[in-house]
Length: 112
Image 1 (cartoon, one colour):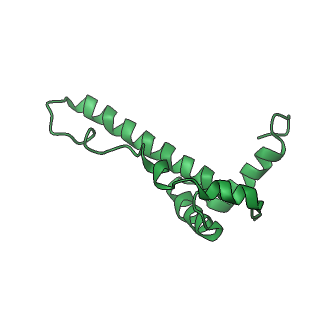
Image 2 (tube, rainbow, N blue to C red; image 1 turned 90 degrees about the vertical axis):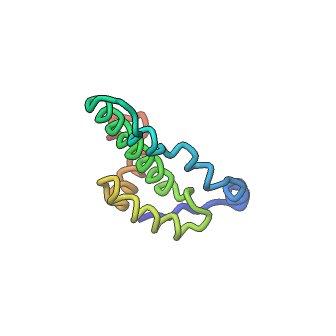
């Protein structure tokens, strides 16, 4: 597995980011499991929407760990990727290697 090496200028730019801001759009559960007079089909639709949002959030977090920019410490980002990867049904090393290949052949016939 490759490890991203940042220049000092890139590292300073990354250190100014706030990690908590990346979680501000985490979907809340109150609108899914609310105590309202909603029929079963609408409640099921809301649950599916919530789970889709959760899966999208996991994929975005996995994408950031592949770039090694989710956490300030590189090793922490790698371990977070190893935790988040199985939760999104893709092992972290498989995702990283296929993503590196994608970037290597971007907009070319060999791009997956």
